Image (cartoon, rainbow, N blue to C red; front, side, top):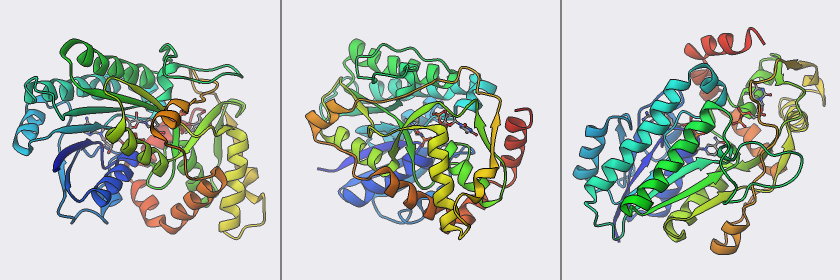
Length: 351
Ligand code: NAD
Ligand code: TYD
């Protein structure tokens, strides 16, 4: 059956992996990749699929309700996978308004467009909202986030994502819109903008620049290879139960400083530097405000109900990731010129 799927944020990190997966795996679907192309969106993430007949790029802002409605109508959209967002915690601390604008109001605009265009005939329709584990707040040393963990976001980013999750569920409960939500842990892999820990540090190691570790480096994150996240979205999109939430994670927790040491080892090896050379770049800096101590996802529901499991061990994933950035230094150079230098200066000069 032909499906016209609107994927928002498809030029970003996770979105580009998802678009690639769906257009290649389902030639019978048509994917409309709707993206505003902010600093984080990059069409060069998708050059390998841009000419496929079942793929169309649309440059638009999800907040532009009239334009979104028109796109729904003209293209007979019958499913949405919504990833477009402002996604970086540090930026949200500097500029919370843009997070409320895109993540909350933008999501609301998409929900309202879907509701109006589907005219309450929701048969065969789906609004899939991609969210984060950060909505659950921070864990202590023990325990995991499950789907029923109460929301307790701490950063403007996670507060805006939490709010968008609530709107999605409210549209289901109030209007019967068929929705599904997933909350995933930290992703890593190719095409991630080098403001996030792993690509930022790979880039700095290659330039022999300081590696700014927030606080004591003791915060814990649960890392999942981005292609495994895209596979999970595919499974939930096709088999997930309407109205449900699925947590996605790889049971792969790392204390930041331990992960950074692994990263240094792999990058040094790939660059032909003696083991541990770049450890001298580690620089402890002022902690992030409201820095969540630990995230850890229990993804048993997804495994037990839908049979999804991560495919890659972390060591393998991190080696693949480091190799990709080092083999694609042009990509790194392109996204780190111009505006990125101002960002870096602003974010890190007073730490
Ligand atoms: P990203 O920042 O790499 O990409 C976001 C994309 O959204 C970009 O292409 C950008 O141009 C686009 N965008 C931003 N504002 C827009 C707007 N107003 N209209 C249209 N497009 C707009 O983000 P990512 O890391 O790929 O995350 C994608 C989604 O997954 C987000 O919703 C994020 O909250 C969620 N998520 C991310 C992670 C992670 O580790 N990166 C983990 C769990 C969930
Ligand atoms: P990040 O990649 O920004 O993801 P998130 O904050 O959404 O989990 O950061 C991952 C961890 O790395 C987080 O604990 C903050 C820390 N971190 C640093 O220590 N230094 C940095 O320069 C950055 C960007 C992050």
